Image (tube, rainbow, N blue to C red; front, side, top):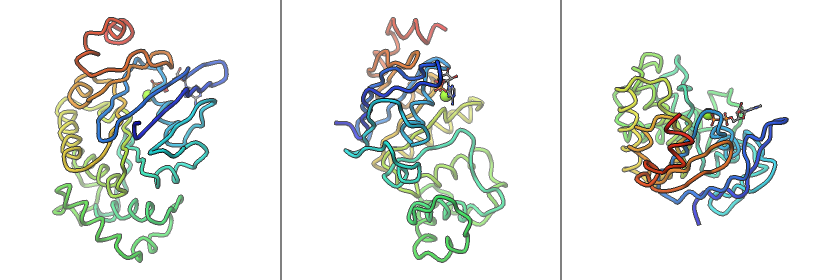
Length: 249
Ligand code: ADP
Ligand code: MG
């Protein structure tokens, strides 16, 4: 049994069947990539995992518990964190403060955060945020405004903001979209570094095959809302169905 078990999930938007009958099993402590052409349903699937969308049919189990019917912040508290495509950081707060906020949100279960004073008051938040920054080699940037960070460090901060919540499953939707090759390679290195340091499962939706083949241990190919093949990267590379549906497009 995988840490994430998706069974017979379907999702329709009006007349459009965005997800057909999706089955997916993600093994604990692995990097699992979901690839497929534009419009294949990758983001829709991810949205079903984090509670942003409710599937029409099927089940989504995380560590033996159903995520369906739970609110996004409840799913986050179960141990699933999502990394956004564009860094969602607070530019006018310090790097440390940026990490304290999600730390507090995760502990407190707060959905809407408007009480910065509550963040500062809660015992242990600052220490935990400092520990993550040290782990991510960002201690020297602790007190500077997040807006002043380089693009690469903003991405690093964003990862710290996720990791401070101690997720067991990290979901990434096209983490290198729009990046130049050098930034893409830095992101690959950063994700490898994170994976090496902790017990974490990663599920990456990615268009860039260089990223997929650099990181993934297993790959699911989605086409028109249905999984086409699932296998190890070496097998996916030469798979005729994959060539036809995706690589040759
Ligand atoms: P991918 O991430 O693989 O590119 P998406 O999951 O974003 O694909 O989209 C799958 C299909 O569902 C596409 O045809 C898209 O236009 C459609 N779709 C996605 N979200 C919505 C929505 N909220 N309302 C209507 N159609 C949507
Ligand atoms: Mg998408």
